[in-house]
Length: 100
Image (tube, rainbow, N blue to C red; front, side):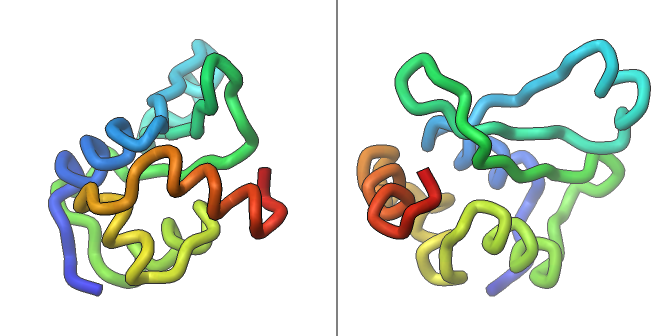
């Protein structure tokens, strides 16, 4: 997996149903990260990942950690970010694998 710009990763996550969650408590205690939670319809799921606000590029080892957090393989995570994998396909995979 290659390094990616943080903005591009966050944009890809948003396109697939992840939303940036910022509560007052998180903003005070964890201002160094952006927290993304997957929404299915209007329901917030437990599926989550985060990006660091301190770096403009996400290195491969951190992308691999994000891959594990969202329960995908490296190639599937790249498909998710690059948009060949739709939100519906991702939710279907998670459901089949018992994560949703």
